[in-house]
Length: 341
Ligand code: NAD
Ligand code: UDP
Image (cartoon, rainbow, N blue to C red):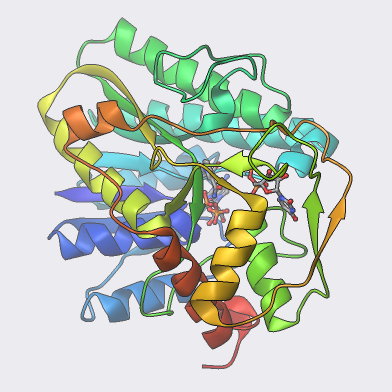
């Protein structure tokens, strides 16, 4: 099958391209590199035994370029990762987020429809769930009441895709709600390469361990959790990538919409993560406790039961694997893809 992977040069996209190639699929990547390096695809290609990855450097809102892409390659289905994802930035620049994330999705679907390609997997997020749900979150948990524009773009894109599947029974849409992706491919050749100061916990931990940051700020230790720090459902990025391969099988067999959590079902606190990282890698992670980060919830974790049952997928990597692979990537590429090889 030939899969168009939008945002395929990015963190999750690059790992997914590799898993798709390993399963014998062909991959075409469209990415405007606004938050990625084309080097990631060279490395994916190397890891896949030199398999070629056609790459189109384009903005998904550019309908003409997308049209040319669909004319050039015979695409069977699309995995749509492309989007802006920084929560704080979305609060500061709401228009940029709504424009990029919504218009990319709409333009992509319009071109897909024109070419009779009506199968899409969408990168959604646990952020679409409302803050007042009981844990664990299932696909039936309440959504909406998002606390930032980024979350609303995911919520709205889900709605757009659902409406599409409702209006035309030939569409199949799979909405994958990711929990907290961390880690890297075990080779250390591809991984997460955030620009500027990382917003997320794991890259901040590994950049502190390597000395790029002096100290991790732990946002609050007075939550109602086992050690007072926030609890999340961290999932190894390779498990997440494999979740997309499993979703493709569903996409080809089913019609309508499918919504699935991709998480492990287990929650770890910020301090659990710090200590696990130190233990797995034998490196210290200096930290200080600071105020809570506005908008954070105490505890967020999934039940991955539906994905297990209906996709036949479950996470297999341990917390130790996540910590070891994050550090392997960070220490081999201290400055990310800009590091010398
Ligand atoms: P990423 O930034 O590494 O990847 C996104 C890619 O999309 C980048 O390569 C970027 O250059 C590209 N892109 C953005 N806007 C584009 C546009 N208009 N046209 C073409 N390319 C564009 O992020 P990631 O962590 O790999 O996330 C992938 C997807 O998963 C995103 O949609 C993100 O919102 C979603 N997601 C991520 C997380 C997470 O914690 N990483 C959690 C939940 C959901
Ligand atoms: N966190 C932290 N310090 C940081 C970044 C994150 O203490 O520098 C905490 C944050 O408060 C939350 C957890 O780590 O409890 C995961 O945060 P992240 O931003 O990675 O994911 P999200 O909040 O989106 O689940």
